[in-house]
Amino acid sequence: MADIASDMTLPATRPVRLRSFSVLGWPVYAWFIALVLVPNLLLIGTSFLRTSNGLIVFDPSVASYLRLWKSGSFQFLLFKTLATSFGAAAIGCLIAYPMAYYAARVVQKNRSILVLLVIIPLWISLLMRVFAWRMILGQNGILNSTLVGSGILDQPSEAFLYTGFSVLLAYTYISIPFCFVAIFTALEKIPHALIEASQDSGASSWQTFRHVVWPLSRPSVAIGFSLAFLMTVGDYITPSMVGGIDGTMIGMVIASQFGIANNWPYGSAIAVCLMVSVGLVLALVMWAGQTKGVLMGDEGARAPVPTHALTTGQRLLRAGAAAAFALPYLFLYAPLAIMVLMSFNDSSVQAFPLQGATLRWYTELADNSAMLEAVQRSLLVGFGVVLVSTVAAIGFAFALHYGRVRQARFFEFALAIPVAIPGVVLGIVMVLATQLVQIPSGIGRVVIGQASFVMPVILMIILARLRRLDGALLEASMDAGANHWQSFVHVMFPSIRGAVIGGALLGFTLSADDVMVTLFLSGTSPTLPIWVWNQMRFGFTPSVNAIFTLVGVGSLLVILVCNKLVFREAPRSDA
Image 1 (tube, rainbow, N blue to C red):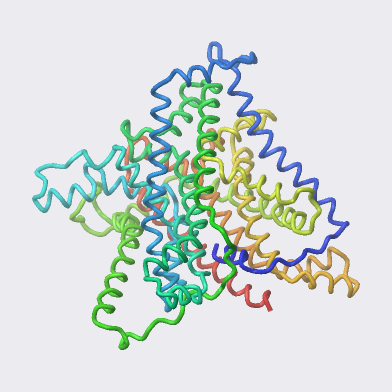
Image 2: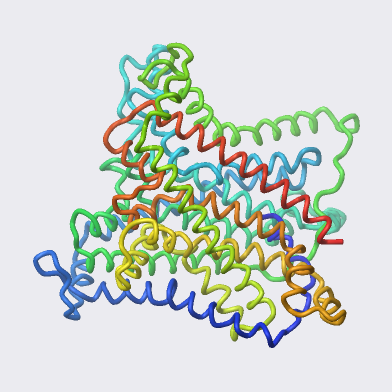
């Protein structure tokens, strides 16, 4: 992600326009129509239909919207959802900004490790992270057990879980990494010469921050806020796990309309209202985040002042800043650490003190045929999604970069629309699209649905890498007599191989972790996250801790492999 952000500071290289690549433009148009335009038009069209005896009647009507207009409960729930996600994103930015500033402007040694530690939770299963909070906040959870054991409470309290606050807490936990990544990439690029110029002009530290640092970082704060807001506003998994009745959000209502209620027009109308509301909020946020000027620096923070040159007050201030910097890390990793610890607990009750160490929850997994089938299905879906998305992303990236698509900038953003659609809405539009062409529930539907948001992510990574390459490389290859295919195989692909591998691994992780879209498409063939989700709905089993621990370890291994391949490739391709 840092590489992508750094591309904004590099002078643009004029791409080579190749007429022979014009054939690559048509797949871009076809993908946009099939997986972006038609599904969303179907959603809007369905919202203007009506139901009769549980069946959709093709009779244009605004009954669903009139029902929403008159529904005070819907308006309250929509406002509650937007306010909760907005509040979580705002708190996430407030926590992430000091972290990002300290990492970008103060820390010099091991900075990449500190940044990676914030990003790692993004790669670990969302179910795992949310479930960890349920285990902490539950009536028999870690928090209640600690408070009762210490004598602060006489009996376990029900006030910690299944409340609006528990949803806000979980949303904030989800938001912090997204806010951090966006803010860090901006703060790291602010030239220290600007800071020195402000200080030499007599400005105080606060004035320098207000008039120099904050204006230059404000657009990235808006981006981080928007990412965090999008990740939570359509989430129905987190409220279902930690919110209960008091934590009900609009995503849960939309999901129920396409499930138990079987009222697709009404559910579509709610989804359209949610999308419009989200669009208005994000438009205001991005407008507020605008600032004059363009950040072109790449200097970053200066070398730190030696410790022996600091006064006693400065040393205490630095120590306090380091302690405050560490607190969010505890917030991010404590739930995961507790889950791993509980996976070895001999007791089926998730509470302290531990009853002893055991591996029986891991050994039980080997005998669970349903779980093993779900794992196999997840691997099959993941490889299918990565194959389709990576091949498409490579072709689309070359078509967009080398000008073989008219209005390339528009289509670059248009293809990324599924990434910006709330998860519950994306799941619904994919159901409508696959239902139109009569694709049955199962692996095929899941691959199509997941590819709609995985491909744009890989595309953005590859495009960012292409824009860093010198256009003369391709010209030199073709001047030497190589055709387009030979130039691609021997020159272009080796230069972008690291980005392709990194994007593919990230895509596989996104696929393996997806719940919100897959739940609508999998039918009776659940992937591992859906299987775990179904298990938790009918009661807790300690083996879930073991499953999530293994998933977390697998995600960490993917991260290590991805970083090794990408960073090993970068110096060689930049030469």
